[in-house]
View 1: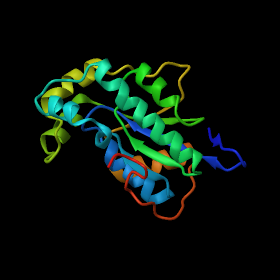
View 2 (view 1 turned 90 degrees about the vertical axis):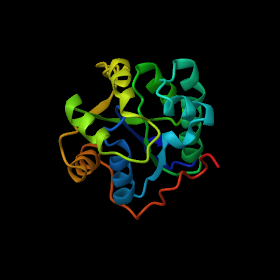
View 3 (view 1 turned 180 degrees about the vertical axis):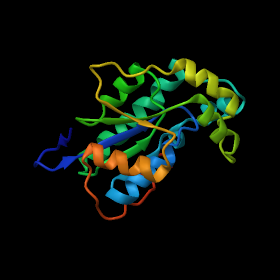
View 4 (view 1 turned 45 degrees about the vertical axis):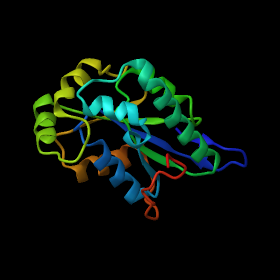
Amino acid sequence: MTGERPGGAATRHVVVMGVSGAGKTTVARGIAARTGLVFAEADEFHSPASVARMRGGVPLDDAARLPWLRDLAGWMAARGAEGVSTVLACSALKRSYRDVLRQGPPSVEFVHLDGPAEVIRERLAGRAGHYMPASLLESQLATLERHRPDESVLVLDVSLTPDELVSAAIERLGLAAGAAADDRPAGGPA
């Protein structure tokens, strides 16, 4: 699953998805470090109003998420047009959200970090410095739409260590090891 840009250079675009606390950022950063894909954290693309809403314990609705998802798809498409492959940490909980992300570059691959809610709750309880409160986990679990047979999604068990998750994603997606990538979201929000 690669996207061809004019001139023939193929790019790869991977979205590491799952509920808050599943390890998306850790795994996506690990993939970027080992493969050279440029990393972006989808949370950094949220508007200040959306961040304030989530910080207050209010989940975003689809209307609030749509511009954010379009920005993410546009970011991946712009990087692809530059010949740059990407890895994005993004919840992508619903099929419709994943479909918006697929409208960006020619091809997007998804890695779903999935597993027991108890494991994720424990991780959230120990996490500091994130605006997403643990109280929103239940709304995320309720929102999560598991992939359907017509979606190509690699599902990995969150019970694995971060290193095992990174290795499994790289191996199963057939990503090549490369130079260390800059983990700033190139062309992302200011």
